[in-house]
Amino acid sequence: MAKRKIALFGGTFDPIHLGHTRVAEAAAKQIDAENVVFIPAKCSPLKGFSPNATDDDRLRMIELATRGNERFSVSDCELHRPAPSYTLDTVKHFQRECGDDALIYWLIGADSVDDLVLWHRIDELIDVCRLAVMVRGGYAAPSFDRHLQVLGRNRVEKLRRNVIETPSIDISSTLIRRRLAAGEDVGDMLCPDVMDYIRKRGLYRRN
Ligand code: ATP
Image (cartoon, rainbow, N blue to C red; front, top):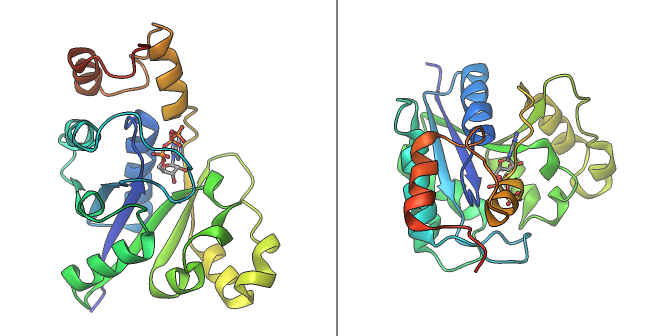
Protein backbone atom coordinates (compact mmCIF):
# COMPACT_ATOMS: atom_id res chain seq x y z
CA MET A 1 0.00 0.00 0.00
CA ALA A 2 1.28 3.50 -0.83
CA LYS A 3 2.46 5.41 2.21
CA ARG A 4 0.64 8.59 3.19
CA LYS A 5 2.80 11.65 2.73
CA ILE A 6 3.24 14.27 5.42
CA ALA A 7 5.11 17.49 4.62
CA LEU A 8 6.77 19.33 7.49
CA PHE A 9 7.50 23.01 6.96
CA GLY A 10 9.76 24.57 9.56
CA GLY A 11 10.83 28.18 9.84
CA THR A 12 10.98 31.18 12.08
CA PHE A 13 7.74 32.56 10.59
CA ASP A 14 8.45 35.99 12.04
CA PRO A 15 5.85 36.68 10.67
CA ILE A 16 4.31 34.01 8.41
CA HIS A 17 3.55 35.50 4.98
CA LEU A 18 1.88 34.65 1.67
CA GLY A 19 5.16 33.33 0.26
CA HIS A 20 5.14 30.61 2.93
CA THR A 21 1.52 29.56 2.48
CA ARG A 22 1.50 29.67 -1.33
CA VAL A 23 4.65 27.62 -1.82
CA ALA A 24 3.50 25.16 0.84
CA GLU A 25 0.23 24.69 -1.00
CA ALA A 26 2.00 24.17 -4.34
CA ALA A 27 4.47 21.73 -2.75
CA ALA A 28 1.67 19.74 -1.11
CA LYS A 29 -0.07 19.36 -4.47
CA GLN A 30 3.09 18.26 -6.23
CA ILE A 31 4.08 15.60 -3.73
CA ASP A 32 0.44 14.73 -3.02
CA ALA A 33 0.87 15.31 0.71
CA GLU A 34 -2.25 14.83 2.80
CA ASN A 35 -1.01 17.34 5.33
CA VAL A 36 1.46 20.24 5.61
CA VAL A 37 2.50 20.89 9.19
CA PHE A 38 3.87 24.38 9.89
CA ILE A 39 6.46 24.22 12.67
CA PRO A 40 7.76 27.47 14.18
CA ALA A 41 11.34 27.15 15.41
CA LYS A 42 12.16 28.33 18.90
CA CYS A 43 15.41 29.62 17.51
CA SER A 44 16.97 28.67 14.19
CA PRO A 45 20.51 27.29 14.74
CA LEU A 46 21.83 29.17 11.68
CA LYS A 47 20.08 32.53 11.99
CA GLY A 48 22.25 33.73 14.85
CA PHE A 49 19.52 35.92 16.33
CA SER A 50 16.29 35.39 18.20
CA PRO A 51 12.92 36.01 16.58
CA ASN A 52 11.38 39.47 17.04
CA ALA A 53 7.90 38.29 17.96
CA THR A 54 7.30 35.96 20.90
CA ASP A 55 6.73 32.24 20.45
CA ASP A 56 3.04 32.71 21.27
CA ASP A 57 2.57 35.51 18.74
CA ARG A 58 4.32 33.60 15.94
CA LEU A 59 2.26 30.50 16.71
CA ARG A 60 -0.98 32.48 16.75
CA MET A 61 -0.16 34.16 13.43
CA ILE A 62 0.52 30.75 11.84
CA GLU A 63 -2.82 29.49 13.16
CA LEU A 64 -4.57 32.49 11.62
CA ALA A 65 -2.78 32.15 8.26
CA THR A 66 -3.40 28.40 7.91
CA ARG A 67 -6.91 27.91 9.30
CA GLY A 68 -8.62 28.33 5.91
CA ASN A 69 -6.80 25.39 4.34
CA GLU A 70 -7.86 21.95 5.49
CA ARG A 71 -4.54 20.45 4.39
CA PHE A 72 -2.62 22.78 6.71
CA SER A 73 -1.95 22.28 10.41
CA VAL A 74 0.41 23.72 13.02
CA SER A 75 2.69 22.06 15.56
CA ASP A 76 4.29 23.76 18.53
CA CYS A 77 6.63 20.82 19.22
CA GLU A 78 9.84 22.85 18.70
CA LEU A 79 8.62 25.60 21.01
CA HIS A 80 8.51 23.11 23.87
CA ARG A 81 12.10 21.98 23.38
CA PRO A 82 15.13 23.98 24.46
CA ALA A 83 16.67 26.08 21.63
CA PRO A 84 18.22 25.64 19.12
CA SER A 85 15.60 23.74 17.11
CA TYR A 86 17.22 20.86 15.27
CA THR A 87 15.29 19.55 12.27
CA LEU A 88 16.47 15.99 12.82
CA ASP A 89 14.86 15.89 16.29
CA THR A 90 11.59 17.18 14.84
CA VAL A 91 11.56 14.68 11.97
CA LYS A 92 12.14 11.84 14.43
CA HIS A 93 9.33 13.16 16.63
CA PHE A 94 6.91 13.02 13.68
CA GLN A 95 8.14 9.60 12.58
CA ARG A 96 7.28 8.30 16.05
CA GLU A 97 3.87 10.05 15.96
CA CYS A 98 2.86 9.09 12.42
CA GLY A 99 4.19 5.54 12.36
CA ASP A 100 5.72 3.45 9.61
CA ASP A 101 2.99 4.04 7.05
CA ALA A 102 3.92 7.73 6.72
CA LEU A 103 6.53 9.16 4.42
CA ILE A 104 7.93 12.34 5.93
CA TYR A 105 9.04 15.26 3.76
CA TRP A 106 10.85 18.31 5.12
CA LEU A 107 10.31 21.38 2.91
CA ILE A 108 13.01 23.99 2.48
CA GLY A 109 13.35 27.00 0.21
CA ALA A 110 16.12 26.91 -2.39
CA ASP A 111 17.87 29.75 -0.53
CA SER A 112 18.63 27.30 2.29
CA VAL A 113 20.64 24.95 0.04
CA ASP A 114 23.93 26.86 0.24
CA ASP A 115 24.38 26.33 3.96
CA LEU A 116 22.83 22.86 4.07
CA VAL A 117 26.09 21.20 5.08
CA LEU A 118 26.12 23.31 8.26
CA TRP A 119 22.87 21.74 9.43
CA HIS A 120 23.04 19.50 12.49
CA ARG A 121 23.72 15.88 11.36
CA ILE A 122 22.64 16.71 7.82
CA ASP A 123 23.69 13.31 6.42
CA GLU A 124 21.41 11.49 8.85
CA LEU A 125 18.59 13.95 8.12
CA ILE A 126 18.83 13.27 4.36
CA ASP A 127 18.80 9.52 5.08
CA VAL A 128 15.76 9.44 7.37
CA CYS A 129 13.36 11.70 5.43
CA ARG A 130 12.83 13.32 2.06
CA LEU A 131 14.39 16.75 2.20
CA ALA A 132 12.46 18.55 -0.53
CA VAL A 133 13.90 21.73 -1.98
CA MET A 134 11.32 24.21 -3.28
CA VAL A 135 12.68 25.99 -6.31
CA ARG A 136 11.11 29.12 -7.69
CA GLY A 137 9.42 28.47 -11.02
CA GLY A 138 11.53 29.82 -13.87
CA TYR A 139 14.74 29.72 -11.81
CA ALA A 140 17.54 27.18 -12.25
CA ALA A 141 17.66 24.30 -9.79
CA PRO A 142 20.15 24.97 -7.00
CA SER A 143 23.62 23.55 -7.35
CA PHE A 144 24.03 20.54 -5.09
CA ASP A 145 27.40 19.61 -6.60
CA ARG A 146 29.29 21.82 -4.20
CA HIS A 147 28.13 19.49 -1.40
CA LEU A 148 29.33 16.29 -3.12
CA GLN A 149 32.45 16.00 -1.04
CA VAL A 150 30.69 16.33 2.31
CA LEU A 151 27.42 14.52 1.53
CA GLY A 152 28.54 11.96 -1.04
CA ARG A 153 26.94 11.09 -4.38
CA ASN A 154 23.96 9.07 -3.09
CA ARG A 155 22.72 11.81 -0.79
CA VAL A 156 23.21 14.49 -3.43
CA GLU A 157 21.23 12.37 -5.91
CA LYS A 158 18.48 11.96 -3.34
CA LEU A 159 18.30 15.75 -2.90
CA ARG A 160 18.15 16.21 -6.65
CA ARG A 161 15.23 13.76 -6.95
CA ASN A 162 13.24 15.76 -4.43
CA VAL A 163 13.33 19.18 -6.05
CA ILE A 164 9.86 20.72 -6.24
CA GLU A 165 8.98 23.61 -8.51
CA THR A 166 6.91 26.26 -6.75
CA PRO A 167 5.66 29.71 -7.75
CA SER A 168 8.03 32.62 -7.45
CA ILE A 169 6.82 34.93 -4.69
CA ASP A 170 9.15 37.72 -3.78
CA ILE A 171 8.29 38.16 -0.11
CA SER A 172 10.38 37.65 3.01
CA SER A 173 9.73 38.17 6.70
CA THR A 174 12.76 40.48 6.80
CA LEU A 175 11.18 42.75 4.19
CA ILE A 176 7.88 42.77 6.11
CA ARG A 177 9.58 43.60 9.42
CA ARG A 178 11.54 46.42 7.77
CA ARG A 179 8.47 47.89 6.12
CA LEU A 180 6.39 47.70 9.29
CA ALA A 181 9.16 49.41 11.27
CA ALA A 182 9.15 52.18 8.67
CA GLY A 183 5.35 52.49 8.91
CA GLU A 184 4.87 51.19 5.34
CA ASP A 185 2.02 49.07 4.03
CA VAL A 186 2.52 45.29 3.81
CA GLY A 187 -1.11 44.33 3.31
CA ASP A 188 -0.42 42.51 0.03
CA MET A 189 2.20 40.25 1.61
CA LEU A 190 0.21 38.84 4.51
CA CYS A 191 -3.10 37.12 5.13
CA PRO A 192 -5.58 39.82 6.33
CA ASP A 193 -6.11 38.12 9.71
CA VAL A 194 -2.36 38.16 10.34
CA MET A 195 -2.24 41.84 9.39
CA ASP A 196 -5.05 42.58 11.88
CA TYR A 197 -3.24 40.61 14.58
CA ILE A 198 0.03 42.51 13.98
CA ARG A 199 -1.83 45.80 14.18
CA LYS A 200 -3.75 44.93 17.34
CA ARG A 201 -0.65 43.61 19.12
CA GLY A 202 1.56 46.45 17.83
CA LEU A 203 4.17 43.99 16.55
CA TYR A 204 7.30 44.95 14.58
CA ARG A 205 6.93 48.67 15.26
CA ARG A 206 10.04 50.70 15.80
CA ASN A 207 10.32 51.48 19.53
P1 ATP B 1 13.57 35.96 7.16
O1 ATP B 1 13.41 37.00 6.10
O2 ATP B 1 13.29 36.42 8.56
O3 ATP B 1 14.87 35.19 7.03
P2 ATP B 1 11.84 34.13 5.63
O4 ATP B 1 10.85 34.97 4.93
O5 ATP B 1 12.97 33.55 4.82
O6 ATP B 1 12.39 34.88 6.93
P3 ATP B 1 11.54 31.77 7.26
O7 ATP B 1 10.54 31.60 8.34
O8 ATP B 1 12.95 31.91 7.66
O9 ATP B 1 11.04 33.00 6.35
O10 ATP B 1 11.39 30.63 6.16
C1 ATP B 1 10.95 29.32 6.39
C2 ATP B 1 11.16 28.55 5.10
O11 ATP B 1 10.37 29.14 4.06
C3 ATP B 1 12.61 28.54 4.58
O12 ATP B 1 12.92 27.24 4.08
C4 ATP B 1 12.60 29.57 3.45
O13 ATP B 1 13.55 29.25 2.46
C5 ATP B 1 11.17 29.41 2.92
N1 ATP B 1 10.65 30.64 2.31
C6 ATP B 1 10.48 31.84 2.89
N2 ATP B 1 9.96 32.75 2.05
C7 ATP B 1 9.78 32.12 0.88
C8 ATP B 1 9.27 32.53 -0.42
N3 ATP B 1 8.86 33.78 -0.66
N4 ATP B 1 9.24 31.58 -1.41
C9 ATP B 1 9.69 30.32 -1.16
N5 ATP B 1 10.17 29.87 0.02
C10 ATP B 1 10.22 30.75 1.03
